[in-house]
Length: 202
Image 1 (spheres, rainbow, N blue to C red):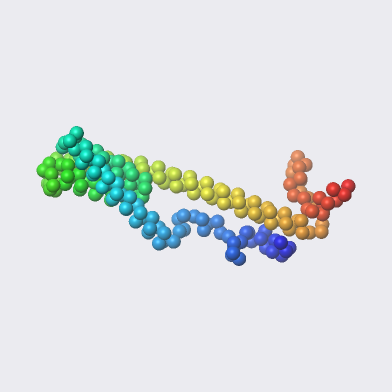
Image 2: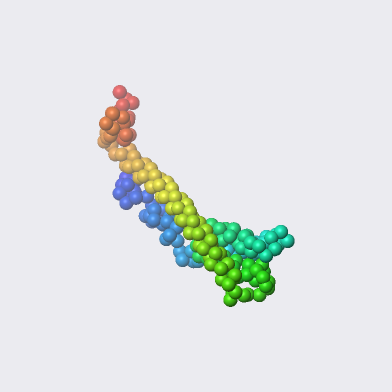
């Protein structure tokens, strides 16, 4: 590497394709809006698919439970939705799950009777349970995303430091002077090629 290019790399940081590399470009929160929109839609698809699966499982279990536990499988759908798409997808799954359960598994079946006291009580209990699931699931999902982002940033910082150290070593090796740097316990940290050659000649 020419001396001027190596000096520029050490001062201004590593470059990719002629542009200065910015570690913030790896931040998922700075992704294009179209990518975030696709991720949101995938979350809603996961939520609806989870509700359909929960309804199918509850329908299969209908001879066992009858009119009891109409929301049993839909709590799992809410948990799956919050894990796969976040709290917004989970809210959609919870709302759709209640409507499906009310229509298919609460007497009188195949009708909406939200004016009855039982339906209102069921809605309140179901909402509280789903709210707790969404709160805990969203907190866990946020903590996991934060941990992954921090691990990625640490790895990226370490890589950039290594690249800058390599560029600095190339600058030192390109100089005709005998340069060296030692640690406090007299270990060599940086040694120029001229200095290293002198030691070999001695």
